[in-house]
Picture: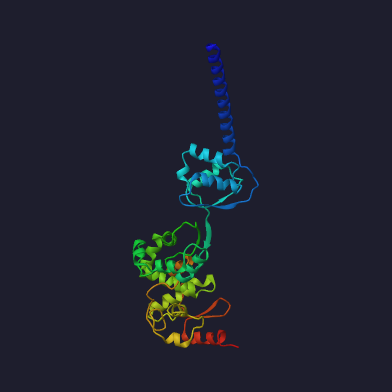
Length: 339
C-alpha cells in the first residue's frame, strides 16, 4: 500500500514538474515573441513621461494603459531579466506600439528622450534668445539672462567678457525637457568655439583684433545687414573707418545702449553718450551687440577691398555705398528724403 502511494506521489510530482516545464517553456517563448515583435506596426507615436524614481511596475503598467505594450507583466519580467529596472532614465519619450518592447527598453536605458527643435536666428541678442528659450519651456527668460551675465559661469566657459552676448552661437539645436539652463548655454558657447576655428583666430590676430573685438565688429555687421550678399562691403566700411580713426556711427549700437527701446530711434538718442553710442565714442563698443552667425564673422575677418566710408539704406534691404561724404549726402537725399 505504501509503495502504491509512493508511486502515485512520484507520478503526480513528475506530472506537475512536466507541466511546470512546459508552462515555463511556453512562457519563455511567449515572452520572447512579446519582446521582439511590435504589437501594432501602424500605431501613432505618443509622448510618455517617466518620472524620476518611478518604479518598474508603475512604468510597465503605464505603458500598457497607453497601448504601447500588450503586457506589463511580460515587460517587467523582461526588464528584470536584463537587470535594467534601475537603469531606466527619467524623461519624455516619443513611443509607439510600432516599436518592440526590446526597442522601448533600450530607449529607456540609453535615455533617448524626446528632443525639441529650437532655431536661434542670426543677430538675436541675449534677451531675444532668452525669450525664445522660455517660449519652448526649456528655461525661464529671467534665469537665462541672469546666467548669461553670471561671472562664475562665464569664467567656467572661458569667455573673456562680462556677458555671453556674442558667444551664444545662432544655430538649430535639439534639447530635451530635462536639460538645465546652464547646459543649454554651454552648448551654444561650445558651438561658437567649434565654429571660430584656429584659422579664424590667427586671421583676427593678423588684423590686430582680439577675438572679443572681432566678434563685436561681426555683431555690428550682422545687425546692419539687410541683404546677406552685402556683408563684406559693410565690413569694409567699418574696417576703413577704424583705420582712419573715424567713428563707426552705427544705429544698431546706439539702440543696444538704450534701455527699453521703443523701436523709434530719435536725434536725442544719437546725441546721448553711452558705452555703445558709436556716434559719440571712438572705436568699437565694449562688446558685441548681438550674436552673429558664421557669415558675419567671416565678413569681419575678410572684408571686401573697397574705399567705402559710408552706406545708406535704399529701403529695399540693400544699401548704397559711398567713398566721400558729398556722395553719401546725395545718396541720403535720393534714398531717404525722396517723397
